[in-house]
Length: 257
Image 1 (cartoon, rainbow, N blue to C red):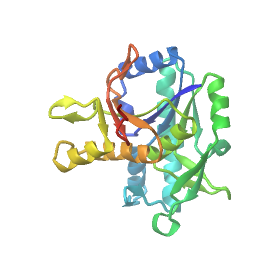
Image 2 (image 1 turned 135 degrees about the horizontal axis):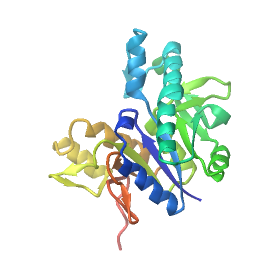
Image 3 (image 1 turned 180 degrees about the vertical axis):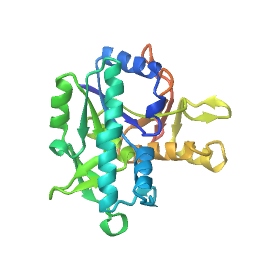
Image 4 (image 1 turned 120 degrees about the vertical axis):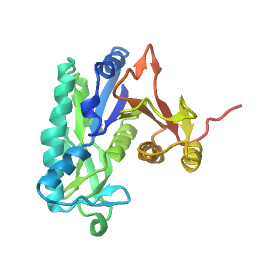
């Protein structure tokens, strides 16, 4: 079975266009099974602000105490997930929302409980569960909430979650959806960049601002074992006539004879 795993950040959900969903349709017509993993940072921050809880981050990961975890799960499952599922259904896709802890979908362990609190790293993806869903022709839309062997829920970085799901399903591609076409170098869209090139372009100022965390997230995914990640736009067509539009980020230089 051919899988495409798509990570959609919470900040881009409201910017998805008809062209984006047209590309999804073409992928389905070509026999790909689509799996979504989504974030929800802006919605979580809004709710934390409402409860007067100050967000805290350690090395890019959200420090998660018990109250923050409850709020994060409530927002991810009850708001962000519902929003994305509804949009897919609006475009005639059969989508089903899944909390990552449901059915042991995303099994996880603590990263560092003392430093980060209830933050986890995926130890296993229940691929049988996901295959059951996609074999019924549904698109799973997964929240990055994991569960430990003891039944404790953990907050998981959505980029890492998408990478682990892509690895476990042996996905053909892992896509990170953003609000830009990809990475621009000297004014032109780069079709692909190696880890070494990304590091160089950050240092020399070609990659700046909000694109830095995007490419770093992609690099984190390939370092987790995903062959490559394509940064694509949620505002435009990203797959057309069998061709990808975006920037492929990869770990190793291709072997040439």
